[in-house]
Figure 1 (cartoon, each protein chain N blue to C red):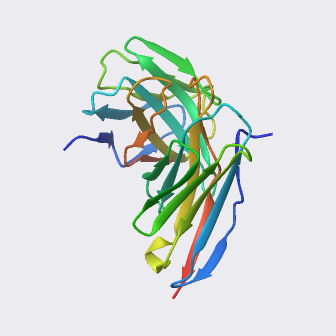
Figure 2 (cartoon, one colour; figure 1 turned 45 degrees about the vertical axis):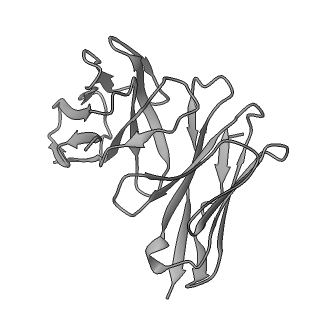
Figure 3 (tube, chains in turn green, red; figure 1 turned 90 degrees about the horizontal axis):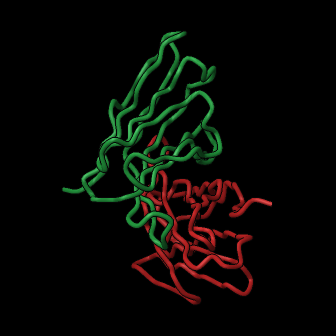
Length: 114
Length: 111
């Protein structure tokens, strides 16, 4: 079945540690996105990528980094510079970048501080 | 002004009633809108897409788009307790470079 796989489901970060969240899709989508969702809040865009080896900052990129070395993969690193990382992280993808098509989501990764 | 705005709710309706969820948008050039359902602790799931003015029906769900009024709505007929969730309205801007999500409306369907 085609879809978006995020791992792990739950992640704990120690102070001063960088952690990486995985996002893989087999939908052959060009565009991929990372969102952060805090409890009771809406989605906030962290980074997005419309093509391999290219990505752009979203609204809250500080303290995060990404790479897009393969079309299928868009990992997100939460660095130690992100002082309040506890949130639900969602990866999404869509077909033609910036098109009239919807985004589809993975199941999310819940990150907490130890 | 936010690009896509929704009333955060909660909206409470009795089981079997019609739930009406609304969304307004600021980009007059927006051409398509999507409704997502998000259960507590889960990721958003696409439930409806609408690309033109008027109504689109899918089972118990009807999406309505009024471009002149910059207004999108989702009607859920015969609401069930299992419909209790947060509903997000979303769509691309006119130049398709960004995708905007509303903050979501929480729906409670009471048995």
